[in-house]
Image (tube, rainbow, N blue to C red):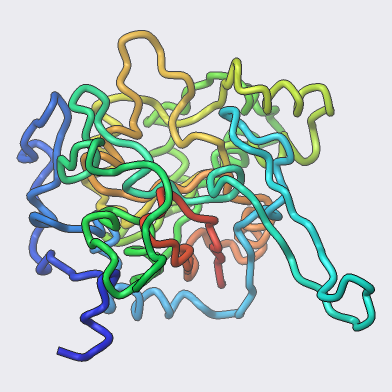
Length: 350
């Protein structure tokens, strides 16, 4: 074994490439379809396993013009984050108290989920069972700092389980697919019929229709990105009063995909490596009475990253210009040991 592979934070891949079971063959655990056994006991990657080297190499063929599109908003946006999260603080400092040399540093304090980000496997689990992905009890994911003070090579691997650093070592890369729901709804001069900052459900039938209209055929390992409209609403169609209200964390309401068994089945059967949207939550928020929101299944049971606050505005423009909705997608999650989430650091290349 190479010396570098003995480090306590190195991800050990458990899953051996094999045919995946149909949705109907997934066992139910805590009332939800569960893929823990699909990826193998002790797995730390979940659906990112599907972003195999072969899939990534094949996706590289999507690069034709070399046009690069960042999918992240600036770190400082939104200035008043949703869900009552800490606002980002970015400070430029001088390297000398008397400013005697031209040198500067940044000091950044932020919640990794305040803006464009990935939800990791430590972010959200199965509420009824009080556990995270792979059935790890929430009591085994303690809050507070991870002890690295004396010898970082002796860090307790258990304190790192399900951390975002696992995806940092594999990256989240492959063929990206944009489903531009906003443009689909606004075709032929129509006006968007919902407010992205309201609890509006995007029906699965419309998602399928949009994919058909764009002539998209999904492949296992794709990274799905939905444009639902929050980015445009926030940047170009909102008031300061609205931004303050959205950042209060007392009445968060956002459009998103439907919280249904049919959506769970569709997501599983298409075998996405990751899913994302431009909304603060992937699913319609808050869930209706009696609904179980998708975070529990997608993250807690499938082991899938959920991207939120992705900037899809220029992505939409470039996709239309190329008349193509697929592209090479790449993301480098933060190498944050034991992290619950990460800045997106995502991009598309056409």
